Length: 209
Image (tube, rainbow, N blue to C red):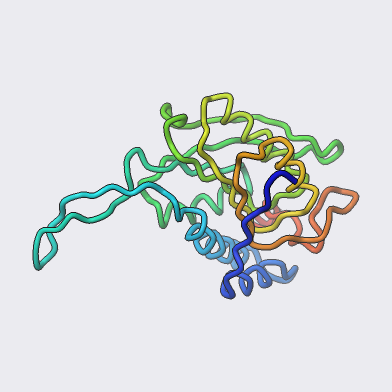
């Protein structure tokens, strides 16, 4: 592949990924774990966000302190499974903009079907963090990134909890300029396009459907 994924190997993250894989984890705990995993991964994925200085006054004195430069980043949810990750990301970057891209995978063809797009008007001028729990075939991620590039976006990265080699290859072939942060690299896709060993369908497990 054109570029290697950035694997976040922190022990706390790996522990929580094991818990979220467990088929007996109920939806409420599943969602909680996805939120925690997202926030742990974002510490790595946001390391190079631009800072600027702002004058503030502490209880002791006035100082020039670093803050996120404006306009701030935009968080992009590849719906619907990405929404749980989006909520978690907003908890630690509450001033971020939000973009929703509605894409679902056709269960027969495994192709991405786009049905919704909503984003800030100045999205092309901002850094983007795309969140999607699973990088399986990568059809949804490739389609979402293509939509964003068509709107002039050049600075973006993708954050996924799990990824399959097939998805990483497809994404690297289509968009080699987009860094990918993953929590774990799994072995392969099965005949239905699910990641193995995986965690099942993240959207279904999040919303008990």
